[in-house]
Image (cartoon, rainbow, N blue to C red; front, side, top):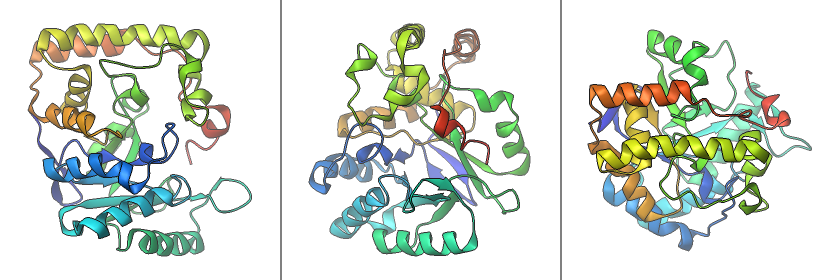
Length: 290
């Protein structure tokens, strides 16, 4: 049972909330009125560690959260992180960590949110920067950073590791609604991800069934097992959703205690059933590692 984890000198509630999918990349583009139910539910539950970025629909995601915070006067209840590091307003998207970029982008972030964020990440890391926290993909479906030394190094240095896509970009749920790659919305980024395309789609979908067996025996959902697994590794998950009911389900993972045997079972599933296909399309893969 994990309810909070240390983060930059304080305790924050887990899981957090990844706001990207409200308006970017996942086939949804919600208005403030459409996003209010899930955001209000997050505040009600105490799910108050929120994540956004300039790159999420070129600032529109930040604006959405800013409008919500102003309307409901909940600034003092939230820890909000955003990010710069991608030039999204130029002729092509590129990685940059220049001082001019950071100054311009954080001023824009403050203007859109209506306040200074509690944390400002670099979306891609400048190797000379002092780092309090890093954000990278981690889930039972993607454990790359266990083997490349990133998680181990972060723990050694006391740097918080924030896990984005802790539900595998939507795979790790009871009712994954997509039956084939053609079911994704035209603007859903998963149409560009090799893991979700062709035969990879069907092979990877079968892996979820193994985790579902564990969840059924546990009397909880696949998402709750997956999030409890991430928390058990000492990592701060930020699952995103557009639905209040799904957010409440995710929040319930705080009360899931995985026994030693269940952790061993989950580890075997994770180690044996490696997903097929790259994490990103070629163009986005070229931006990884900066």
